[in-house]
Length: 163
View 1 (cartoon, one colour):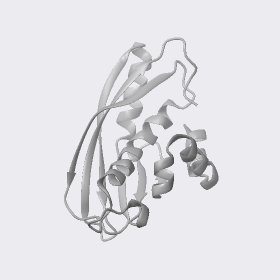
View 2 (cartoon, one colour; view 1 turned 60 degrees about the horizontal axis):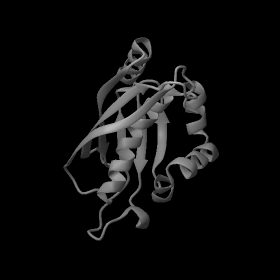
View 3 (tube, rainbow, N blue to C red; view 1 turned 180 degrees about the vertical axis):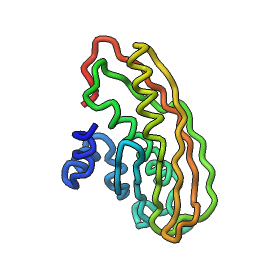
View 4 (spheres, helix red, strand yellow; view 1 turned 90 degrees about the vertical axis):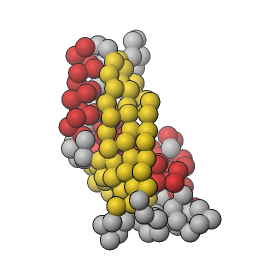
């Protein structure tokens, strides 16, 4: 897990990771502000590339940042694990409360629950789902949006581990 976190917190390695895996996140400016075993913090800027015609951050960019705040925690707990475990979003809900007109910061505090879900899937050599929450606030600390994501985790048969 620590090796994955070090990779994501290196600016160059993170940009290369995004370029390879999530180019839309790279171009829209989504960034990981911090990540630990327990939580992650991801920012979504308000700029030309992430803006909609209504002068706010495009909802898809907000969803991308929220999803990344949960997904990097899942990936961190799966990094180089054996057996390899696949991850897939099977559900998402979103509530928008305020127009996003500056940097939106998404926080997911469900890292320990995600770790436990990964451990359970590996111990059972099976599959499981877990629903986690990401909360987005603006620079004033006001609630902008809340997302929930349901992740499906499943042990892969005969495949290489997540890299």
